[in-house]
Length: 95
Image (cartoon, rainbow, N blue to C red; front, side, top):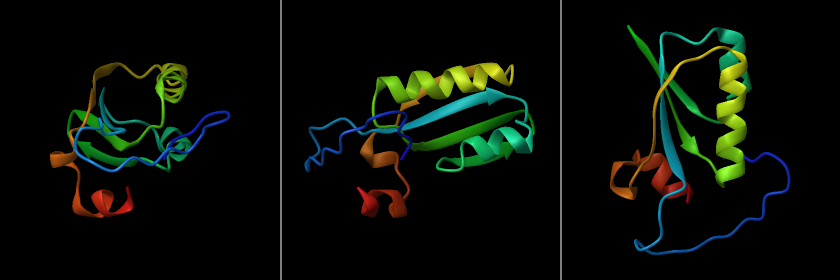
Protein backbone atom coordinates (compact mmCIF):
# COMPACT_ATOMS: atom_id res chain seq x y z
CA UNK A 1 0.00 0.00 0.00
CA UNK A 2 1.38 3.40 -0.94
CA UNK A 3 0.78 6.02 1.73
CA UNK A 4 2.42 9.44 1.73
CA UNK A 5 1.90 11.50 4.89
CA UNK A 6 -0.81 10.67 7.45
CA UNK A 7 -3.04 7.98 6.03
CA UNK A 8 -6.01 6.68 7.99
CA UNK A 9 -6.77 3.02 7.48
CA UNK A 10 -10.36 2.26 6.56
CA UNK A 11 -11.50 -1.26 5.84
CA UNK A 12 -14.80 -1.71 4.05
CA UNK A 13 -16.06 -5.06 2.84
CA UNK A 14 -18.32 -5.47 -0.18
CA UNK A 15 -18.24 -5.10 -3.92
CA UNK A 16 -19.97 -1.70 -3.93
CA UNK A 17 -16.73 -0.06 -2.75
CA UNK A 18 -14.27 1.08 -5.41
CA UNK A 19 -10.99 -0.76 -5.42
CA UNK A 20 -7.97 1.21 -4.14
CA UNK A 21 -5.73 -0.67 -6.59
CA UNK A 22 -4.34 1.18 -9.59
CA UNK A 23 -2.39 0.39 -12.73
CA UNK A 24 0.01 3.00 -14.11
CA UNK A 25 1.53 2.53 -17.57
CA UNK A 26 4.76 4.36 -18.39
CA UNK A 27 6.57 4.72 -21.71
CA UNK A 28 9.83 2.78 -21.74
CA UNK A 29 11.63 1.16 -18.86
CA UNK A 30 12.10 2.96 -15.55
CA UNK A 31 15.68 2.90 -14.25
CA UNK A 32 16.34 0.53 -11.31
CA UNK A 33 16.76 3.44 -8.89
CA UNK A 34 13.26 4.66 -9.80
CA UNK A 35 11.77 1.23 -9.16
CA UNK A 36 13.34 1.24 -5.68
CA UNK A 37 11.15 4.24 -4.86
CA UNK A 38 8.05 2.19 -5.68
CA UNK A 39 8.93 -1.11 -3.99
CA UNK A 40 5.40 -1.37 -2.53
CA UNK A 41 4.04 -1.63 -6.09
CA UNK A 42 4.47 -4.52 -8.50
CA UNK A 43 6.46 -3.55 -11.59
CA UNK A 44 6.44 -5.51 -14.82
CA UNK A 45 8.46 -4.49 -17.84
CA UNK A 46 7.35 -5.09 -21.41
CA UNK A 47 9.52 -4.17 -24.39
CA UNK A 48 8.04 -0.68 -24.65
CA UNK A 49 6.49 0.12 -21.26
CA UNK A 50 6.61 -0.36 -17.51
CA UNK A 51 3.42 -1.25 -15.64
CA UNK A 52 3.13 -0.45 -11.92
CA UNK A 53 0.27 -2.02 -9.98
CA UNK A 54 -0.69 -1.74 -6.36
CA UNK A 55 -2.83 -0.18 -3.69
CA UNK A 56 -2.80 3.60 -3.45
CA UNK A 57 -4.75 4.77 -0.42
CA UNK A 58 -5.98 8.18 -1.57
CA UNK A 59 -5.72 10.94 -4.15
CA UNK A 60 -2.85 12.64 -2.30
CA UNK A 61 -0.80 9.44 -2.47
CA UNK A 62 -1.58 9.05 -6.18
CA UNK A 63 -0.55 12.63 -6.86
CA UNK A 64 2.66 12.10 -4.87
CA UNK A 65 3.48 9.00 -6.91
CA UNK A 66 2.84 10.85 -10.18
CA UNK A 67 5.01 13.75 -9.02
CA UNK A 68 7.81 11.32 -8.16
CA UNK A 69 7.54 9.74 -11.62
CA UNK A 70 7.84 13.22 -13.10
CA UNK A 71 11.21 13.66 -11.36
CA UNK A 72 12.42 10.70 -13.43
CA UNK A 73 10.97 12.34 -16.56
CA UNK A 74 8.72 9.32 -17.01
CA UNK A 75 5.98 9.74 -19.59
CA UNK A 76 2.79 8.34 -18.05
CA UNK A 77 0.52 6.74 -20.65
CA UNK A 78 -2.38 5.69 -18.47
CA UNK A 79 -3.58 5.69 -14.87
CA UNK A 80 -6.60 3.57 -14.10
CA UNK A 81 -8.32 2.13 -11.08
CA UNK A 82 -8.49 -1.65 -11.26
CA UNK A 83 -11.84 -3.27 -10.56
CA UNK A 84 -11.83 -5.95 -7.88
CA UNK A 85 -12.40 -8.59 -10.57
CA UNK A 86 -9.03 -7.78 -12.21
CA UNK A 87 -6.88 -8.06 -9.08
CA UNK A 88 -4.49 -10.99 -8.81
CA UNK A 89 -5.68 -13.53 -6.22
CA UNK A 90 -2.89 -12.70 -3.73
CA UNK A 91 -3.98 -9.02 -3.72
CA UNK A 92 -7.66 -9.91 -3.22
CA UNK A 93 -6.82 -11.91 -0.11
CA UNK A 94 -4.80 -9.01 1.42
CA UNK A 95 -7.69 -6.52 1.29
